[in-house]
Length: 196
Image (spheres, rainbow, N blue to C red):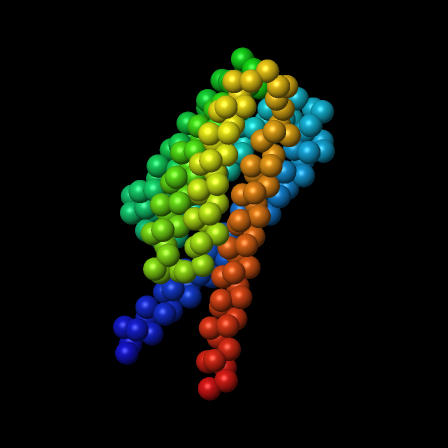
């Protein structure tokens, strides 16, 4: 009985962190999208900084999340996502010296790879935390968006930060859905306990 209660407490603590984490990821991504569509759209230096900062933020977020559940060593998909995001930030900085098409191609590869790792992380968490369907959808859509970016990068269309912003917006949406879903699940789980 005590082991069952201990397990429930661990799950609740984990869900508490995940809610905070998902809301934070939503807030940062949403702010990035707003800035991309407004001030950064016509300010190339700011857009360049933001394009490098976005994968760096993803790396930091994965590190913080993994640290709450045993560290990067125990969470291989997040370790790989962390490394992919750091490498992407460096690759974007280099690609900015060539063209925005090169930047979009780098983002495309990153979206595909990080989407796959995010999907694996969500599948691993399904049993312990639940409410991971939105993260699974997000990971799958990210992988598909990556392939689309790579294809678009090879075209003749003018590319800018606004081309990347919808990808970040969908990510923000899925983080918000996951956070709200966990919040509602916690309320529903506590309701029968309160009734007793």
